Image (cartoon, rainbow, N blue to C red; front, side):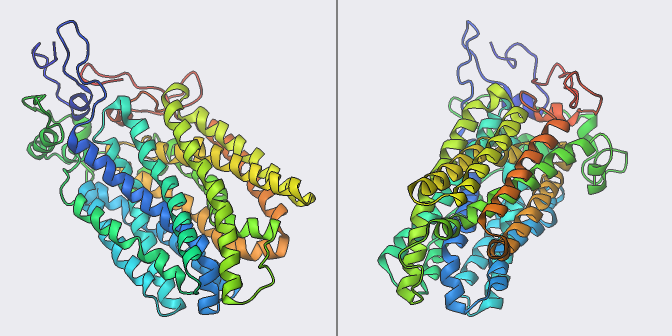
Length: 515
């Protein structure tokens, strides 16, 4: 018998999302099943992560051709690599936080329109300045997607599948990274021109337009609507979100609770602005969401973007001394082919994360993943002491282990935690700030990596990144806040009283909530 049939009408958004009809003996009839609208939102959010991975990692494949096409120096090539990451850093907080004020759906659509416009600009760039401006603009749109896509998924999903749903969508970043590298391999293998990099970006325009169309037809977040006091709209959005056949629930009746009645513009002491992120009780969440993500991005973007370059620099290629167009393309193709194999381990890592996240918890996976990344990077650095076959083996084993462990742990968990440890009224702002802090690390790495690679060599750079991974494990454990099993409404009621494990205490769910 359902709660509705027994007369105990649920009165919160999350209780409706978590409730399922049951057979006479109490067996859930559709436990964990998503409605068509929930699946649509998840797919469209996943598409955004796919395009992000595709574009950011494609830059690494396209970079050698862009350098020769525009005659760039090492500093300028660093600017090109850092430009989309700089845009992500700006957009995550400057645009992503607007979803707390204007609504999740509005920003979810606007970001993709902005992305597509600047993507077209990149494809037809006439020189270095235009290319950089368009890459920054494209990055701003992707930065907005970090908090917005997460909140669109987490605020429309049942608690039981929220973590796996967010991680599965985030996993499409790895799919995009692999796809971007494969696109580069295919184009480089069938053409022999410096302008091949334009085709790499151009092929992304069509899917981005399709995502825009899809995002026109989704509902607003009921959590956000109720949090801003728009009860009637929240009920209609929730009813549309939960449309299924046969229809369940048949009616939706929400109550405006004290903790959500004030909304994002309140002045009654509720969380309402970015300053709240640096005060108790949310300061601990801000540190956990931001600093480990910053440290992990140092490694992920430094290694991920420059994997083809590192492989070519460490192993060498037949065309290494060939400065002709054919030589540059052949050298780029060789590095890209090696990167495909290594990037495939990103998919294995995210698959394991989805499988283990509810069993082991967010914090354990993040700590374990950070330590595994450090081991992988030390292994890769050790390859520079050798030569021949053993050197090649250590390079690939080290980078494969790094990619496996980063997506099993910090690369996926930092994204997941950033959207879970803040209350509804601050979720977009908090997750956006965390993403911006993270991308400071990505920008620094991307800009300095080409220069430092020439000055210090591969071994020193990779060992430094191993150290930042170890530090990430320490910070994660010190400021841990475990959200596994908590509903978003539980998070709204979190306080900073110490728990037996040293993190935030787990709030006691109300009768209408789901723990």
